[in-house]
Length: 152
Image: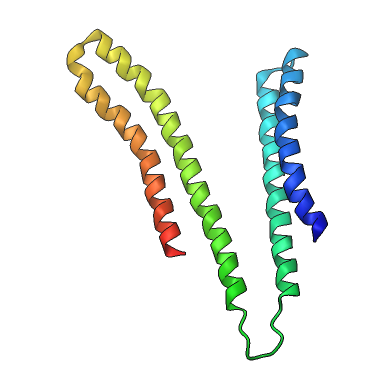
């Protein structure tokens, strides 16, 4: 169990530090940016799979150690803690992915709004609405994560 905990605590930061270094080295050697980006995504995917597998295996090992002594005891607290962990992961993913989506929407809408306003100042109100719609995506994610956290 100690091996799994060390692997979860040491390997992810090492991978997160080495991925940009590998990408920088590939870019300086003349490799295309597309291949460097593919390396980043592949490394991140491997890291997520590794962390997920090791986290759930540690959780399973803890359940085996903390098994009820008699039949009168229930296993509800360990199930609740597993639900709590998955709920926290879900809330974090909802917030993060909504933030990324909102950032992409604002990155596309804000320059267009600035350009439209510079050509015709009367379009400022309409342009502001489109930028606010992009930002609302992130707010929806925050609301959903709050609902998830209140359900736990």
